[in-house]
Amino acid sequence: MSRVVKQDLGFDWGVGQLAKLNWRHEFVREGYRVFFSGQPFAMHCHHYNINLQKTLEDTLGDEGIQLIIRSAEESSFNNFRNLADQLGYLKTVKSKLEIAASMYLNYGLGIIHLQEIDLGGGRIISPSSHHVTGWMAKHGRRKTPGCHFTRGWIAGVLAVIFDKPVGHYQLQETHCKMVGDPECVFLVSQK
Image 1 (cartoon, rainbow, N blue to C red):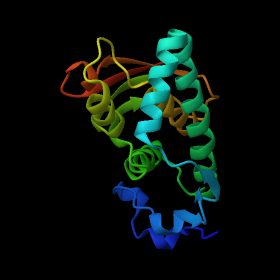
Image 2 (cartoon, helix red, strand yellow):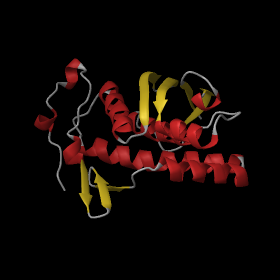
Image 3 (tube, rainbow, N blue to C red):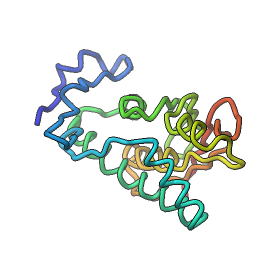
Image 4 (tube, rainbow, N blue to C red):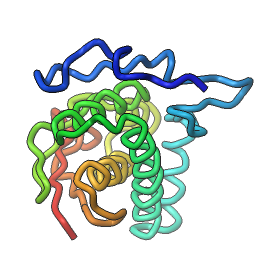
């Protein structure tokens, strides 16, 4: 497995420039398997995830929603913790938030803005989500916000960034493109 080393990144964290990982080195394919930073990684498929979400919501209701959130939280926590350990020189919260936003984008999940967040919580905005686009194409508008995977993904990453355990953060989606809002907005708080 290839590893990114500090000099490959080509930027100065102290200046706060956007983190630019060498994604060609971080994403490695071995046959049908994909690895990110040495960890096995299942590439997301919005068709699968949308159908899974709809099935869990329809059959289990809120329990199904919580299952999606917890699963995304645990997997993003483990994946981001592994990356942060490998890039041990990432010392500032700002640099970790920049890497997290870049990861979300490079995973093909969409765009998230993590600037309005600190240890105690805050607000996160997503103006573009591949999952939302897929949901809208397949099922149309919803009556309630539906970015459950994103809620869990963000909670797991924030737990690593602020050195908290899984389950420390909760997110409420107050606006969602699936219900017709112009962007998805998440309020983050500590449990």
